[in-house]
Image (cartoon, rainbow, N blue to C red; front, side):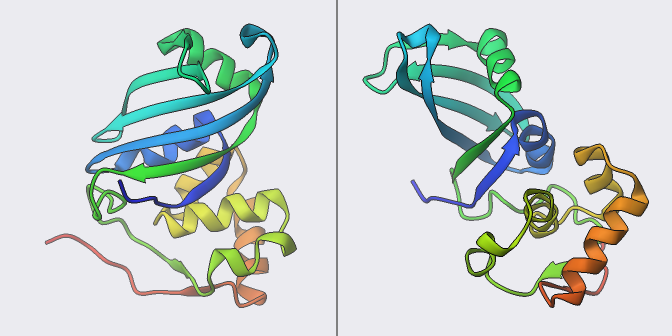
Length: 170
């Protein structure tokens, strides 16, 4: 299975970000010692089909299922930001269902700037890479339009993003 991008986001933001996907995607994150697992490391796995959450499971590394569905999702929500590794079922999994108006595109490889950005800047950059517009980013990150505009301007001033032409389905 091909490995896709990595995101450091709360699970709710990750799910909202992935809501426009066309294919099946598995998102995994390693969890540090959990009390529910006798303080052993665990693996959380989400399966999204056509942008909708179908399965949510937390298991020990050997594979013993600890929590599933709503209970697992609730725990993941309480844990805050996690590093998610995405595995698409097909190469076009990260193409949105409908082409959206996209005002910016990432101008540099994300791996080249990771250490020099704040967590919020990384989130905005990842959402821009996922073809979300400013209004969607503001909604997903619970920020005002002005806050997103300031973050986008700062990223553009550092030449991390550049304007792009709008695209529309016909």
